[in-house]
Length: 505
Image 1 (cartoon, rainbow, N blue to C red):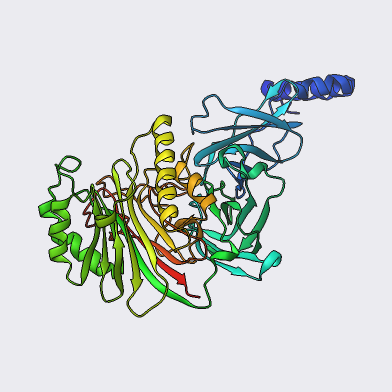
Image 2: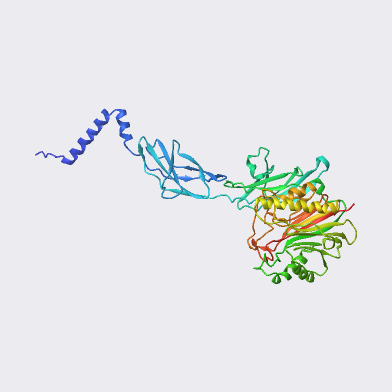
């Protein structure tokens, strides 16, 4: 007897479906197959990798790459400054890599990629984020030293320019150029004559500069991530040949200081509580001459008792001159012969070196305060009256004007300088051979322990002007400072100390 084997119904059904699929495949056209593929979304993108950001100024370029996604014809790259990818921007590329450009530095940027096939878009990859750190911006540079090389028409000024080190900097680029006044109208980066010096340290020596010109400077750091933004601009007048160190000279170390001893101006800081410390500061400065402002007669008398070895050479209104007697002798002064009248005041003293040499006229002055254009014009008139009077009486004697001018190069009208420069008088800050303190810290502190800083010029209203031929060996704001804070303020102004060398013929 023969047994019949029955095929299960389920197996028959599978076989029929397989045969039907094979027949369908044989009869499907290529166009139909492409249409089927187009209806499928590309596979998810994986392994998105970010490269190092390349930074230039305030913008960064970030490269990224990823693995091939099955079914993708192109790729959509998305980026946003948040992991939620809210308001993401995007671009489409054919390759499996891209560079997203123009990203703001100092932010965290997140990226996603997804495959695209026709109108079908695959699933976005997981966000991959990168903190695009901004290279530390260099602080404004300053001039540390100045010298003159050569002579005559071949004379050149050499400047040593420095700046605070920038974290992560591998090198620096210092841009500089002669800049006409007013310098604010001539951005350095637009100056076609701009030159660039590269340095591996935060200092560079610039030889061959033109004497008697204004040069402006900017510095930027070069890091592994790129270049930082340019620093704020600093500008400097270059030493002229007549201000080089004389072959034969006598030293005259001078301090100018508005000590705010007026009961009205400084009633919240009584002078009697500061007078001993002020005298000690003057003695510690070890100067031959101290020109003081806002020092009325009672305050001058108190200081005279506390400054043994110094003579009160002149006093008029609230301006005084003290002279160290073993170095200089007072020949004449405005106490006995009168003098120019300015508001608030000025006094003068003619002194001669105790060991012989050239006589010098020292003026302590205080020009009108005030921020208005009218105040500027008044200061200019006062400066003119003062220098005309002095030069009428002392037409050729070496002259030093020291005091609170209430003006600086940053003013629209720096009246005192514009009057005195044509008379051969130059600001010690402009022509000093060495700067022994940070030049950008203002000489007026306004009783604030955090120093005020003016990077373009240094807003020094306490100034020392000297006549032609006098060399300024150094300039310094003599104010104790620690960790960026003043530690022992004795006035709303800081003592400014200069080392002068008077030519002896």
